[in-house]
Image 1 (spheres, chains in turn cyan, green):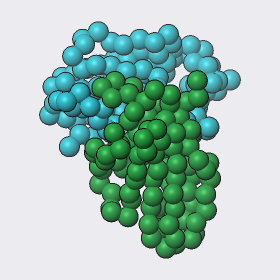
Image 2 (cartoon, rainbow over the protein chains, first blue to last red; image 1 turned 30 degrees about the vertical axis):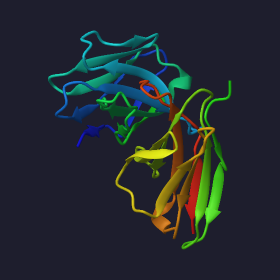
Image 3 (spheres, rainbow over the protein chains, first blue to last red; image 1 turned 120 degrees about the horizontal axis):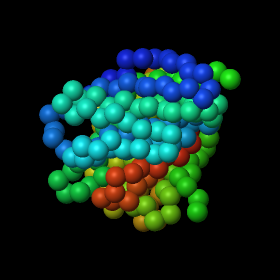
Length: 118
Length: 112
């Protein structure tokens, strides 16, 4: 079974600074998808960024980028130019591909609470 | 375009009762998944419905059951509620064979 570990329960960053959130995972599969989700107090999970394991290039979405180290099974999220609206819980998630192409389940880590200091 | 909508937003039930939660997927989506998120934890997969059939199931007891209707909306039913069932229940919809799931705002269930 796949597992996702987020060992930092909380982090804090100064507005406009850069912060990196860590995530490790365990799997025996060679192809899979990794995600970072943001959950603000409104409770709705919002997709921040995704990475396909077969792609060597790290994904980037505006101020958000990942450092994907497949051999080390590490998938960290870097937030640049942090904004007050970035304050939320962030979850790392794993999804294995299904041979039929079906949309399989997400396995989440425990999450990290990010606070942004003005 | 309405996203994923869940109802109700909050619910209080007594131990032993039964509860039904509802989810309307994003327009065009045919797959619905349900997750349980305990306080301070990550979501745990309950089950997934596609074409009105349960396609995958997580490690949850049979007290948890579901249904998907022809319009792709879905219900989650929990029987014989326990205090430990208190959690945020999230619904996620997706298009089969796509990589992205869209989540609703969840239903906060409190069992007293």
